[in-house]
Structure formats: structure tokens, C-alpha cells
Image 1 (cartoon, rainbow, N blue to C red):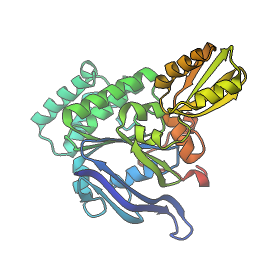
Image 2: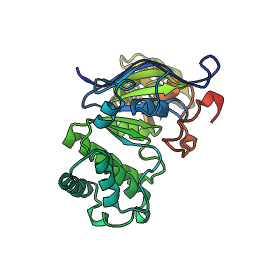
Image 3: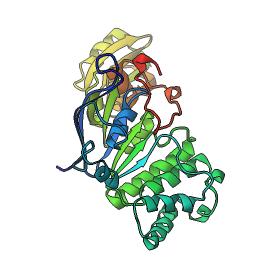
Image 4: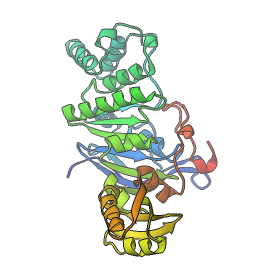
Amino acid sequence: MAFAVETSGLTKTFGDANRGVKALDGVSLSVGEGEFFGLLGPNGAGKTTLIRILTTLIRPTSGTARVMGIDVAEDRAGVRERIGVVPQATTSDLDLTGIENMDIYGRFYSISAKERRERIDYLLEIVGLKERGRDLVATYSGGMRRRLEVARALMHRPALLILDEPTLGLDPQSRLVVWDLLTKFRESYRLTILLTTHYMAEAEALCERIAIIDYGKIVAIDTIDGLKKGVPEKDVVTVWFKGLAVDAAAKEIGGLKFVRSAVGEANGLRVAVDDGPYAIPLIMERLKDEGAEVTRVFLKELTLEDVFIHHTGRPIREEEAKGFSYFIGAGMPRRFGR
């Protein structure tokens, strides 16, 4: 399998090598060509530091990183030709029109005038901004600016699109529009997409595989289903009933082959299972066979948030995200404050 991104033992220390802040600590991962890969973690976990290394803005302290087979430390220009980047901070020029922003970006890559015009028309059409292309970006909403920046990052037909918190601060509707665009672009261009986010719903909606990063280390990496299978808690079905003793019901339900545990609660059972929707009708049927009348059922399915808590010991809070310039600094790991 060909890899779009490969890192091995990647570390980054800011400051003195012995007493400095270690933002990345031996990160090793691979992203296959054509994959939609997510990097999930709280603010200060090392996500943006990793992105800044992959985009050649900073050099690693040790270890190696390759993008489309090119070492990021040895051939920075070669890497930059093959990647498109949508940074966390908004970087479009508000005093220029959408077309002018796109055109300048195309000039950076020495794209001919004719091809620039064709690419700009095509991309603005795709992101729904063709009618606003001649308007100043200062008149755009936050969601429109984000769509413009996604289009701009694709001007030179990159093989890898890197997005650092691309929907940070957007309203839910704008966020969904950006998700839809990313899915369409990936299908149309056979792009590899590397996404960093702290939004669980975003990671679940878009990514095929996810790496969870915490304190500069990869603590888990797998498909979403694979990550969920590695968590012992699983889905939880709580069922309330009458006409049968709780202890008797717990013993009966606990004996079903798909049940991991059945614990009695006030007038009900808390049943841990692998597949809640599959288990509910079978649990209800068994209770009915035993003479019980089910009065209420509640299902709590295992979420990516549960997976994250399992590996890190805490949830991600949206308010952790702070606006800072992608180009100025990636910030300090949370253990040192930020």
C-alpha cells in the first residue's frame, strides 16, 4: 500500500533539549493514499505541531516524516508542491475579492493565467461562491470564507489536503456544508485528506481511520468501529419492568449469550451489550416470556466520546479550542498550560 503520510518516532521539543517542552513524543503513524484520516485530540495535545511539521513550517527535533514519499526536512519545496493546506486561522485577505484571493494563490504555484481562470471558475462553482467571486471577502460570512479557503487550497491540484480544525467557530449549518464539500472533493479528486479536529461528530462523519493524540503521543489508532471494539463498556440498555423480581430478571438476562453483564437497578436492569439495537427486542422478548411487563427502555450507544474518555480519562470540551495563528505558533502542551 502506498502512503501519503508516514512518520516514525517523530518528536518535537520547544526550547532546551533537556528542559524544553516536548510537544510531540515519538509519534509514528501512516496514512494511506486516498484515505480520509482524522487526528483527534484536545487543544494542546500536539495536533497542530504535527501539522506544522508535515507542512514544512517547522523541523522535527528527531524522527522522520514523509509526505507523498518525500522527507519533509530534506525537500521542503517538493512537499509544498504536493499539499494543500487549510489552516486553523482564517487566512484569506479581506481586502481582496474571492477571485483575487484565488488568483494570487495560483500565481504562487506558477499556474498559467488561462488555467488560473478556468480553475477559479470551476472551484468557486463547486463551493457555491461563483456569484460572490467579485465581492470583497470582508463581506463573506465565516462559512463562506472557509469554503473559499478549501477551494483555494485545491488550486494547484494537490495530492494531499491537510485541514487543521477547518470548522472551528462555524455554526452547525455551515459546518455541515463544509463536510459535504470535503466529501465531494475527495470523491472527485481521489484526494488524501488529513483532518485535525476536536469535534467528535466531525470525526465520525468524515474519517475512515482516527488517531487519538494526547500529551504528544498517539494513544490509539484504528477505524471508528475498531476503536469502539477496544472499549470494554460497550452499549448499555436500561430496561424497566414490572411483574418480575429484579434479581430473577438479572439472572435470566445475564445468561443470554450476547449480554456482557446485567445489573439490577430500581425496578429495572442495566444491561451491557455489544450491539444495543440488536439486543433490545431480544431482551424484551425474554422478559415477556418470564411474565414481566416492560414499561420503558433506554439505549446509550457507545460513542467516539466514550472511546476518547477511555483512552485519555477525560472528555474534550469545545471551549478548549482557542483562536491562534497557525503560522505563529502551535502552543504549549496542556500539562504546561496554554
